[in-house]
Structures are given as structure tokens and as C-alpha cells.
Image (cartoon, rainbow, N blue to C red; front, top):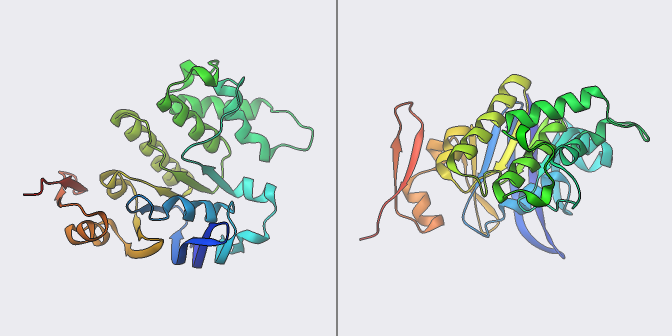
Length: 258
């Protein structure tokens, strides 16, 4: 079953389109990684899917047009993690993660034991349990990034939109975070759309890649179909080798230009 479908999607800022004519579909429980060089329009496309930017075309989620959903309905269906989030001062890690439960509460309701349990579980999975009472202002960049993801995961939505979720993370925490997202989609059927700069991570975790350049899709398909030396030379200006690990996963290796 198709969870997310994009048809002729365009979006931008101040009336100027940054992305245009984007067609894509993601199966329920699938993972689509949007890749491409800086300025390709990856984050803009993700914001359009989240309903944060005006634009043209059609975006449907589980058969419903995203534009027809109320703000609260969107918050229950779509979890969005921006690349550079605004984090309110004065909150602790737990306080911030609990904001993800807001769409599931009544008008004047407070978080209950189930909400606290969900947040506690998410913090533990993201290796944030020991930091639960820490003020946000005291966190490192990597800790802040994981805290933002904790809020999004606490929403328990059917679609996760993650804009460069591994930014600022060391390789161990980056891998652990992506493994967690992957386990959630496999266990709960969560659909994931992310932007990723690390092409090896994109190839190893995503079922499908969308390669963008100058605001348009230039390749779409399985990682082995999209990540070719020719495509990376044409759109990234990079010379690479595509290797296969012992598990069969693709590994993108840059090579020195001679």
C-alpha cells in the first residue's frame, strides 16, 4: 500500500520555486532518502511534504490530501524533525520530548503516565536516559540533535520526516539513531522520508533514493540504481568507487582526482 504520494510538487520561498515537478511515492513502512548536493532543494521538498511551505502539485498521505488536514491532524500523522530546530530555553530534555505528545492530548489535558512512559522509552533508546533532567542549553550539538528526534518519535506518527538527522553525531550515535528509526519502521510500519548527506548511510538504510539537482529529480530508484560513479560525477562533481560490504550493502568511497 502507498503511504505517501507526490505528484508534480513544487515549492519555494517568496513565490520563487526552489523545487519543481517532483513525482515520488513511498510504500507504507518504506524509507525514502532524498540525496543530492548542497542547494539541490532537499530540505525545501521535505518542508513541502510537512505542509510548512506553500506550493503546487499534490501530496497525499494514506489517500488524503495533506492540504485538507487540520493542524492537529497533521501533527498526529506527520512527525517532522528540522535540520536546525528552535529549542525553547528553560526546558529539560524530558520536557522537550513531552511536547511530542501534545497532538494526542485534549484541549486542557496534561500528560499522563502513558505519555511519560512513551517518552522514557524513547529517551532510553536514544541513549538520553541519563540526560533526562538536563536543561537543553547545557547539551552538546549531538545531544540536541538526538533530543529533537526524541520529540518527533514521541509523537508516534505514521510518517517521519527527518532533515539530516545525523548532523553533529559521531559515527556510533549516527548509526544507532538510524538503526532505531529502521527498527521502528519495521516493527510499527512507520514510513520514513529523510534527507541524508552520507550516501553510504543512505544506501544502507533506505529502500529508495531520490537524487535531486537544481530543484529537480534526476534519478529515482533503489540505491544500486541511483548511486553510480557517473551520477555522482555529474551531479556532485565527485570521483568515487561503489563497493560492496560483506553484507552486500553499498559503500560509497571517494577517490583522489589525478
